Structure formats: structure tokens, C-alpha cells
Length: 190
Image 1: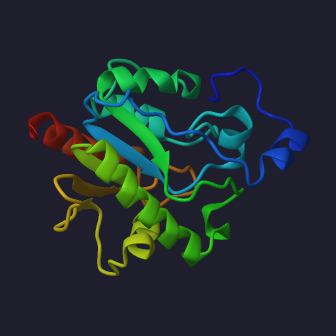
Image 2: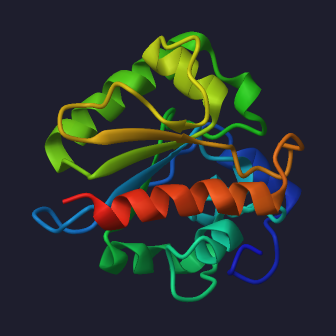
């Protein structure tokens, strides 16, 4: 489900290694209810320029089923999120085949970049998808999925399960429930 027709071929995926995918953010000054933060772009995302584009990634279906979007969006419709007060960024900018190819130093640097982005854009919530990456980037070794006790200024922090198809620990239904908890909190945050 890349939303761009056929999947990129092997050569396109090889060229996408270490590439970046631009953030999806509302215009400056516009409300940003939730800033979703992936770990880093996968090769399909980097090759297409669309976040969470690999077939089997559950981000887009879970986002819809949890009530964040009025319909199921394709990755190539990611720009529609801005009008809903939603955005997407990544902890580490460079694309890899698997998130475990990133070093701890890259994740810590990504945490610093996120702090700066949150300070600049002031989202209601920063939603990090991936507990391990969050623990490393923010130095919170005992973090659990859900709202975190420590925010970033006025921004609440919520850790969500990683929607990658490689994450077998969380069913789609359980992910929908956790994303829905965040949506409910976002709907009631001033």
C-alpha cells in the first residue's frame, strides 16, 4: 500500500538507503494536535517520499480505525494530515532497511532534534511510535507504552507501539485501542 502504484524496484531501494523523508507539518502558526514520530524512514518510504509506505505497515489503517482520520489514507495522501492538525516526523532522519541498523548515538541525536522541533511547533502531543527508540533517545529506560509522566514543556509525550509489520508483539486491534486512547486525550487537550 504505497499509494503510488507499484513498489520501488531493488535498484530504487538501494538508492534510497541513507536518504531522508521530509516532515509532514501544518503551516507555521497552525494548530498541531499530535506530532507522530517514527523511528526512521524505511527504504520504501525513502524511495517514495511517503512516511510509513511499506506494505504491511499498520500506521495508516490504525490511524483511521482509531478515529484520527475520517477515512483510510494512503501514504501518498500524507499531506492531508496537516488539515487535521496532525504531523509526522522521524527520530533519526536516514533511511535504513531495519530500524536496528541505527546507532544509539543517532537515536540520542534524534531526541535532541525532536526537543527542538517540539519547542518550535508546540504540538499538543508528541507521539513516538517505538518504545525502544524512545527509551534510548530520551534516556527513560523504564518507559512503557502510553502517556509519559514527563512532557516536553507544554507538550505531552505518548509512546505508541511500533506499527511496523515486523512488530508481532502488538495486534492491530491492540494498536487501534492505544492510538484511540491518544486520540481521546488529544481531543480533550486545550
